[in-house]
Length: 79
Image (cartoon, rainbow, N blue to C red):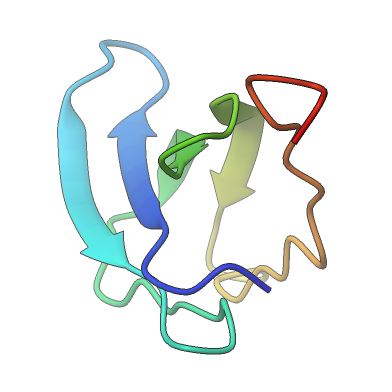
């Protein structure tokens, strides 16, 4: 797990950033209080390629969402 990874969540339709947070020491994060709708999550960390997860749909019957473990690729594959 990468600690202090930047997580940004944007509204899907207009790309307005709703929240930006840092992960904890175990790479976990929690985003609370988001209005229902479609979102894109952007995950970035120094030395790694930015990872984007599209079309996350937060709705009344599914307001909790687990993206599971995500693998980030080093910018320089020799790292």
